[in-house]
Length: 110
Length: 117
Image (cartoon, rainbow over all chains, first blue to last red; front, side, top):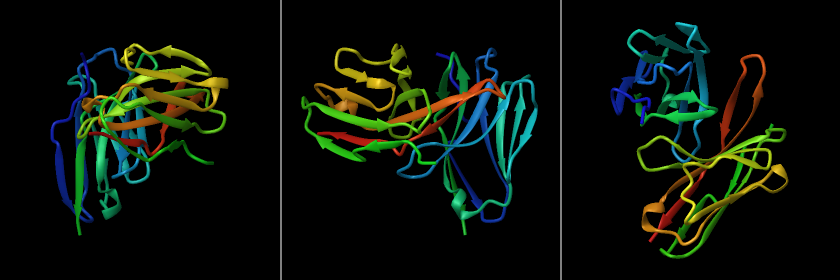
């Protein structure tokens, strides 16, 4: 089926640097995307979302960019901290359900 | 606000045995979801409830899986009999309609990690 997918399974960054996690989707009918953070032993935690009528949305230290032309979205984390180490999922909201990608494991190096 | 509560957190059983998971959603959330998350993968929806009605169970393996949400609050997910391939984390989530954006934000519980031997 059509699912969201991620370019890289792992990402390591130095503490204080910015992180960029990418996600590609294939369903052009998708109009709502969500980024989740999942720490070990916990359920996914909502980070930020974006509608298809937007190109960019900012939160606290996080920014999501959406490029509908190439069906790509990214999550940018500013000044990455050790507490940001987790698996990050992008999810596509369709037909009242969420469809998750595989996830990217972010490791922050102190 | 209390989050989604799930129990047990861990369960180890032998194949062919039954197992049940329990979920208590966030108060006031009328929509409840059960997901299965295999190792290294994203969660996959099993069933979605609107109040006590299962409105989407198309991905639920009905030969061995069953779920119920009596009174539209707590829910249980059962597997009988369990198979080796059922080893996974079973996540419960709940949501309420977010009228300003017209969409539902899902809040996840910590999950139940099932190991079938």
